[in-house]
Image (cartoon, rainbow, N blue to C red):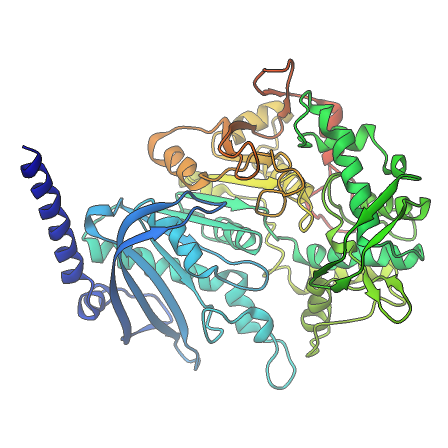
Length: 572
């Protein structure tokens, strides 16, 4: 019997391999593409390359668990837009027939990259989804928008901008879903999206513009509202220049470590994780670090070499930290934009050490500088000085970008009626200690959707309606799209795509999100993550998390951006 069972397994594996080798051919993929007609697009059938891949192993990731024994058809092809001499590359992984689960997954990128390469494709193949990505027409899968945003004549490349803004991923999804149905001869396919950071913004670009194309979306820490987000990267350095104090990274690290230690217990559990940054904002001030000793070993990072540092935290450093946490205000005292939560690293405030003078000095964030130089000024430069830049200068740049990129990079349209009417579900998450994209930027967007979609209902009643199809989860202690080494016991939602699949296909509404500790001594421990606006609270040493309503702390998430004359989708 054992021999017979083993023979059956071998036979099944051979049949599966034979099936993949038969269908994963250039000619078969070409025949699956032939019926596809999309207005304004010509698919180059001669560009198709189909290669079978057998027994593939996906390694464990922050955003999906590992898997082995996967087989798929690795397909690349290209298309062009009629009347334009361009060439857009597409890359799809199509599961073996026995592993296909009637799903298609679109993926996005990060920074100024429109895709995440094979790591993005791997996140879908483990769930039996045909998974796709695009190069946006930029000239290769590893070419970023930064490299093509300016034409040779020094003007903005609007074709590339629109492709990056929303167009290329939409077209990749259109072609991919049609290819999927033809390749597998199926009439029903669930279509999903997954991405974080820039990939999160790209996800919202699809949900906002093409809501009836998607059944579910996983959107993490979205880099939307870029006119504000990218300029905001410069804010911390301008604070240091304005206050005339450039602290060493070690001094800021001490302030942040003290914040984590002081605010850890505010959620009712001492575990090295700040789960309630709202309470931290209400009850803790970084001036408590003034006079305390700090010490760090020498290090080498993106900003160059930093020597060993030690000293006592100064009042000047605390003033810098407090000004950063308060967010950008103009010269009239009005709030322009939000900042990072207490316990987030002061990543944008990292100073550079001058070996000649032996002093630290404030520098411009690379992301912010590239945005100002290339996108606003249309110059072929990615660095800049922050000398002479004021808070009002930053405000002016934000307003300029808000007007210039309203239809491409802002991506904050709050009316999601098309997506909702289609039955779509969106799981939106954001690390509560994100040092790159302010966590509250996600909160104020969700609140804009709530107020737009349910204008006649009160706060609680409208959230009850919204929770049926759009949930936001703030991840305790998490950094930007990843766990946080400084708060290693924090949970991270590794299986968000599976959660959305279960929500769409089985009706399992994630009232709490399953998080897993992915590092440190507590690796593998599971913890429920509350759905906003409910906040986590523990009572007793061995208690489980309770998701509670706390109006006072909730109020800290909704700023009055009264310096901006038009809606930023944050007004109360």
